[in-house]
Length: 496
Image 1 (tube, rainbow, N blue to C red):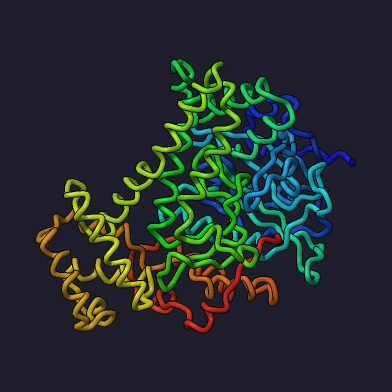
Image 2 (cartoon, one colour):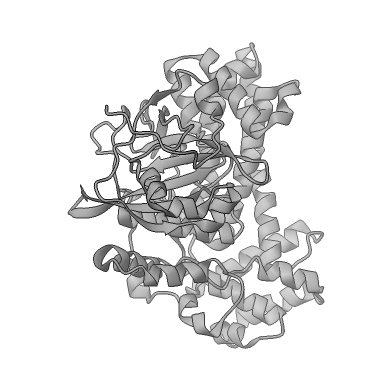
């Protein structure tokens, strides 16, 4: 493979994965682009990474972001991983269209991966071309930024560069390279790969690296690998509760799409629910509803079980004791998640965190049932509650009118929390966004960008989503659900 020329030091790389995990990856050069054009640069994120945004936006920077020029210190590599995909084990997946360029320390002292997506074939590409289409790259940028603005742990996009080359999907589409930033790209599937192919010693090396990277305090723990499992379970329990709080459906929760860091990763068939139903599915390939909105916590527990299986030889030399210890962590997951979910729901309902758990859980589930029965938009239903708590009852009355069941629920809600402090109102507001990445608006923005090279709708939508909690009259259209006929037919797809 042709070696990519090296340019100046755009990033201050310190590449622990390449340094510490020899044999866990394959060195690969990006293929480059024929006519690179910068489509979007995340200047705020560049500043966070201590990177010169102006330099990145210049000709050499665009060459770097397209894979035509390697920044000094980069060690591009494709990571190996496996994965359970829709329940079936695929023993060899890996970065088929991604490359880890290296790692930087951001201005907060946190280590972050800088990676390409769509930079060409790797040894893990199988029959794929290793490329990414412009539309999915922009989707990942847009939804990732929306999630970040909502306060949900997520990978983020630093840039999207159009390559000037076409990629072949159902039809020819303009290609792109996405530069993704992550706390790390360690996945449950990374552990599965080395457990399946190389055994406990390699898993131990990977687990020790994960502890250094994400949980250094566990290095001196009596049971560091059991504690690692518990830490990952804790992060995932909270993450899924955050997803549920904004109606987010990941769409393809395979084990290779579950991070050790607890960040949301891979925004292929993701979507936001509008009319509330736990059975909501958008992904075209999820015909059985395995990854439906209401199944996501169960799937997280299932995925964590796969992680636990890889760690068993490290947890205890006695296999029965190892299973018992890991099982206790896994069996605690539903309650762990339920506690995070209740916290999210209390915030959304404007309740303090000290009330009776049974009463508060019933208030939350009863309101959700009212939304489900009446096919009310999830986001707007909760936002109307906030408006009512903030002495603006009209939106709530518009949704429910004098519905007897709702009036009964509302009386119980007001009895539970007769008064709210100014801080509670602020907390409630920031638990109930006015704007989410509504599917029809995302598709409109991507369509304009891909079909007409018109980035104005994308930029307009992005600006709205980066300020999700403040209602603005000029942005009222962005709070409107799609017509039910549109939502009923809407599907998302994996192919990037």
